[in-house]
Image (cartoon, rainbow, N blue to C red):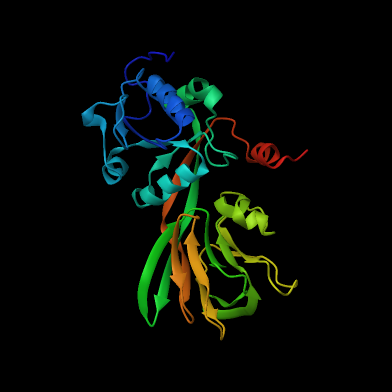
Length: 293
């Protein structure tokens, strides 16, 4: 199935593979990816044991991040995001195989793995740099929780219907005090995710900006605000009644909040490089995924 190019034809020396092991369709795509990569003089690293890999090819995520020139997550956007968050400190390169629903981040489709992956391995690709967010929860002057997010950091209500009362500050300047179901702080990458469903704008992926999007605000005049990505955002949990709130990063890591907790959100110093096949068109992607005419 895969071609056998001349030695040195591959642009990458070491490639890491991460996948969702419980999905048969993902495993089928993984098999096809490995078959393509075996046609090159490439060292493979696997995130877990599988019959496709020798014992010497199984690696921990930190080892993979340090050694791999490229990492390929096989799964949906959730698998891609989880990989990105864990590996962002190493400034790695990623290209994903989509086995999810929308697939805004994973460019390689299951029915075109060989046709899409071969040119990329040979150096025919586009690079796009994305930034991440870092969030921490401060309570009584102490940091209790920290996380990274490629898409968004969300302060939201939890198990009760009662609205939250939040105060937002940008660069130390008071923005507003309002009642709502929560607030989303999104990167351009995340602007087509939860932020979009909450009424936020779509940001071009390479924009140096982020957006604050209220979730079901009580006052209809509260709208999304786009700010510089270098802004420092503080969200304070207020109110007289018992607080029923959490902060969640990319829908994967969360932490329970108390009254007077402050969620500090900053642009991470680490970036992520996403590879796209040549000819990638973001507006075509939007038309396709969002059903535009």
